[in-house]
Image 1: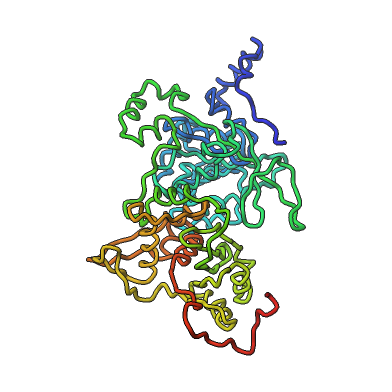
Image 2 (image 1 turned 135 degrees about the vertical axis):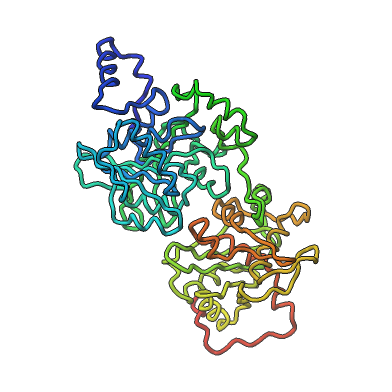
Length: 505
């Protein structure tokens, strides 16, 4: 099991001599920081490798980051999404130290007399995180972590290491409840503490272990290394400590609480109470409202007997971090996704074989043929399968349900069809599997309107915004396409003499 963190309640059991010693430490000018009693102290002493800290505004998040860098770690990096946002943290550090000796504003590195080093960085755009590749730090701080892309955070966590014997390596993520969809990943990242529906909720400060297995993150029972597919996997411990403005005595008399109380809902609940369940607003140009997807997922139940499969949507991985995703549709009931790491689907025959294994009932296979998708399409066609190559860059021919709006391209039309299927007013009964990745992807689409023409953001534009390819969403959008099965027609094109998939049947 993971070791437990420091318990602040122990302070009540100190002897007078021990309390006097502690008081002397608190007033030691050589020690510029001591954590506030309560949540800040709990987070400061946590033994977790990844610490989440925050909730309401004014809980002392930035000072916790500074304090850990000054007292517990040797080589730290404090990151904000935008470089201009670092000014406040640098000013706070200046106030704490009383001077700026050792700070180089050119490279944003503060070198302290005792050899400690604090670097300040930013990653405003997807890919900027690569600037810090290969530069190990024993403390990584993501201040206002919900402003970062999840992919940026996970990438930089890979460089959390040290060469100093005995030095503990930790990451600190400070944040308030997300106010937009882009920050919702934090709730899944700290799900045992933040998701009220989690099957095994965790207490504040409790350590939980997480490991990446087969490209998917899972929660594990302990922090002990384990074997999987011949590989030794070491889980990383994670915790979350909630904080409130009431925990910070320095702000109680400033009127800041009154400012938070005056905020409109749901921002008031988020910032004053740290309520992660308070409403996260959709982007005003989000194609599919989050509530519509959640309603479709709430309807999902596996039937005793599946109706015939009508369509198989296939989104083929385009790169190392992408996944090849297969979506199976039975009427308006969609089965759980079949996802395969891009490294496991390196060529057309492999993807084609997965399609043949997944399809049932002469379902039509819909494949995105842009780029790498053309290879499995060719193999499936040669194998005599009813496969439709979907080029989403082609011109659209249809209109929206009202008949008034047209589409910039086929991609825009297909995504909009998913919106119309999920619209409660259309009463389609569509049921989607309760996949967090699918929810995130379907709610990532944004659109714009030029005259009477709808344009849905491209895959590349979405990747730039959310830091990954919407593979799950694309597969399910393709699966929604309603192509009549070939068996409905009187004639059938004969299969060629060569069948590369004969051994798969």
